[in-house]
Structures are given as C-alpha cells and as structure tokens.
Image (cartoon, rainbow, N blue to C red; front, side, top):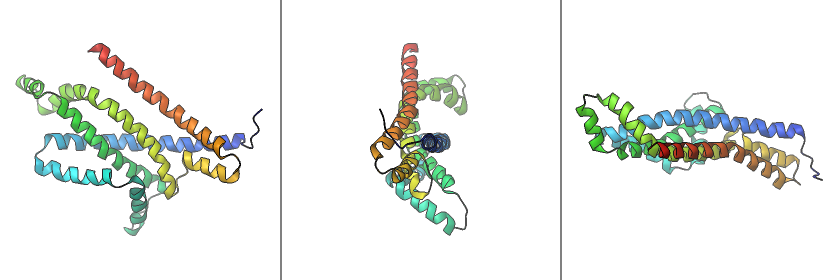
Length: 218
C-alpha cells in the first residue's frame, strides 16, 4: 500500500500551480500568435527594407535564452519606472518569445502557397485582403498547424522558467512541496510530470486528428 505524506491540500496546491501554468500558456500563446501572424505576414509580403528590421528584432528573442529574457525584463521594468507583477512580465516575455517563432511559421506557410494560385485569385478581381483571407491562410494553415501545435506545447513547458521571477506555477509548486517532504522528491515530481502529460496529450492528439481530417478532405 502506498505510504506518502502527500495530503489532499498538497494535491490542490499542485493543481493551483497547474492552473497558473495553463493561464500563462493561454495568454502567451494567444497574444504571441496574433503578433506572430502580423509579423509573419509583414516579413512575407513587405519590401526588404521593412522585413529585415522586423526579422532582426525577432532574431534577438529567438537567440537569447528565455530565462535571461525573463530576468532582464523583470529587472528593467522597475528601472524604467513602470510597475508590473511577475505574472504580467511572464506573459509579456513569453508572448514576445512565442511571436518570434510563430512569425517564422506564418512566413513559411504563406511562402508555401504557390504564386500561380495567388495570381489566379488576383486575376479574378480579388483584393490583397481577400486573397490572404480566402486563399492564402486556408491553404497555409495546413502547413503551419503542426508546427504551431509543437510551439504551443513547448511554450507550456517553458513556463517552468517563470519560477525564477517569483511565479508559482506547476514545477515551482512541486519544488515547494519537495522542500517540505524531502524524502519523496521522485513521487512529487512524478505527479507533476503526470499533470504535464495530461495537459499536453489532448492538445497533441487534437492536432493529429485535425491533420488526418484535412488529409482525408484533400
């Protein structure tokens, strides 16, 4: 029989941490995706003198380790005279980080649409906006979606780094419990890993199901 000092309240504490993980992920991925679509289309459809500066800034967020970005933003925001909670800083940094990768996903998806298809749409009298909404994005979505699912799952796991600036998410809450029960670190981390799996698995399966459905409709 399992003998553990882990109580029901401890499990609730872990679930509360999981809730913060999900909330940070949802906000960051939503904001990052919107920005990523904007930046990705700008990079794919604008002249070089516009796309190059955007690409340079996004390269910074892709190149600098996420932990360093979190610490720097959390340190410099008060220096600038602004007030922000660690939660707000976490969402901001992760959203920018997500947008940097999402922009490349969008740019690649837009570039994958054949130019002949786009010229045909424009020859039918479609405006640039109609071409993007009705032709480009529906076709590009099939290219972008698997990478976007992978990005979303990666961001969810990267939320573990926000503990460094004071946010008690799932991994941090498990570490707090380990300090109280040092004899059960593997059991507590195993529960935390199971929670991560239970969050991630439905998302990955949903992505795979949608991919199969699109292939069947081709």
